[in-house]
Image (cartoon, rainbow, N blue to C red; front, top):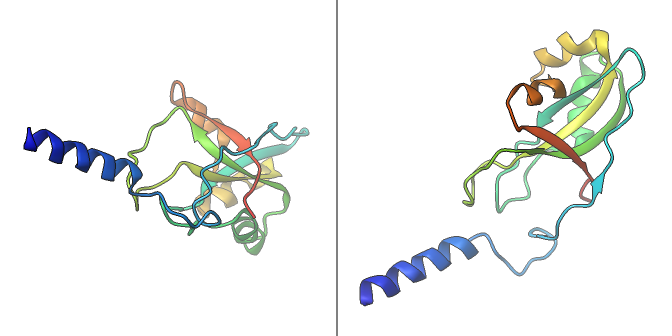
Amino acid sequence: MYKYLVLSLVAVSTVVGCGGSNKSNNDHSPPKLLSSPELLEGEALVYISTGSKQCQNNGMSHNVTAQLLIDKGVDVISSHCGDITGLLVPAACGADTLEINLHTINSQNIPDAQNEGFEPVSKLSERIGVGYQVIECKG
């Protein structure tokens, strides 16, 4: 009986381990979904991971990743926040998230963006069931 009680407590501790009372850093409300940006001819949508970790507020903002592109001579037409869909990550503090930043750029600049670690969103759909959703940016 004692063994099951300990296992139950460990399971509960693991589930609530990332919880906290500081709402500003641990806002667990679902993100507001937005529609995907409309692309004009000659435009492409690229993405990059924010690099954020679960239970931490440490990812790069869409402004930061846009500046990475701009610094390399890539014109950023628009920027958005998003999540990769169709994949699962373990729920553990310090583990990666599926948060991404999306940027509309000129198609001719895709190789320059890839040199900086960005990929076209079309790469996501190469894996069955994987995609992305655009969400309202935090802060």
